[in-house]
Amino acid sequence: MKTGIVSYGAYIPKYRIKVEEIARVWGDDAESLSKGLKVDEKSVPDIDEDAATIAVESARSAIARCNIDPTRIGAVYTGSESHPYAVKPTSTIVAEAIGATPQLTAADFEFACKAGTAAVQACMGLAASKQIDLGLAIGSDVSQGAPGDALEYTAAAGGVSMLIGTNPDEIIANIEDTYSFTTDTPDFWRREGMPYPEHGGRFTGEPGYFKHVTGAAEGLMSKLNTTPKDYDYAVFHQPNGKFPSRVAKMLGFTTEQILPGLVVPKLGNTYSGSCLMGIAATLDQAKPGDCIFATAFGSGAGADAFSFEVTENIEKSRNKVATIEEMLQNPTYIDYSIYAKHKDKLRRA
Image (cartoon, rainbow, N blue to C red; front, side):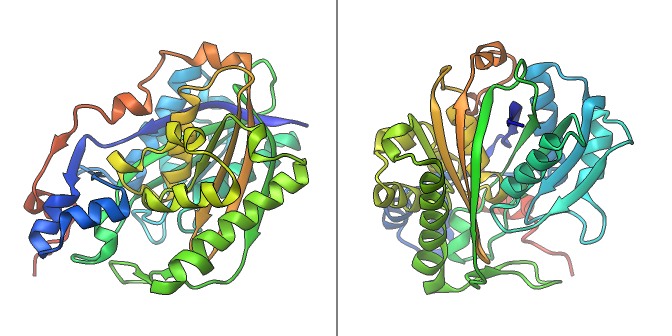
């Protein structure tokens, strides 16, 4: 049975810090960093925001977009690298906050930046097998980067929720198929009890991101017998602005295909929300009949590729909640001291 996206919602904190402000503190070359990363600024959570509150806000947005009864949701899965509790699920908090029935399955997912798309795949299986009516898949993060580390320039905050179901009268984008490519590549990790992740330098690019994204993308196109020319849009995981542009070119996609979903320059890397955020931004603009190709990447390492076809129902979801473009407008800029406070980088003894 065909599954698809019934609704989607996002949340982006209003606070931003510019790359040049972070560079000022650490004495780095802001112009070179901005050009190299293709990121100008990133989102910063408020003091009382975390992956759970962001997940709740994005889920409420998804429900409001389609006015779905939340008691129909039979599964809530939240993917994140920054769950507020080491032992205590984020997904139960979300389910309670949105008014979902207790008769559901809930769990937290972890697979670096592709935990959100892993949750989508799980919801697809449960919905297709008729074990649930609707599944709620979430990618939400308040990404971590050690002070002065390269990650600090891009690690951002935000989340996206997607309702997955099978009713053709409700689906706004059919999921034609999905394909995953996974290996044990230690390009990025964080041990229990450590406040910040570490990265494997040379493993981040070719052995990590590019090998897995191309592996999943080429695998899905081969499975579907499609080419980049068969798609109107394409979205790739956005750790920065450079990687998705490069991998798109490697695979044969054009700049015009990826530009609508390329939100990282004004947002930063929202980790588990990154690829989903690009898909959401693309759906905000897509028309019935448009085809969208998307590939998420998660360090450790793996990639999930998806092919979507937008349906006529997309028009019913317009103007119900804020678009990604609207959420990126009119931010409140903060300096490094306020940023450090918001990110709890200043610890009391």
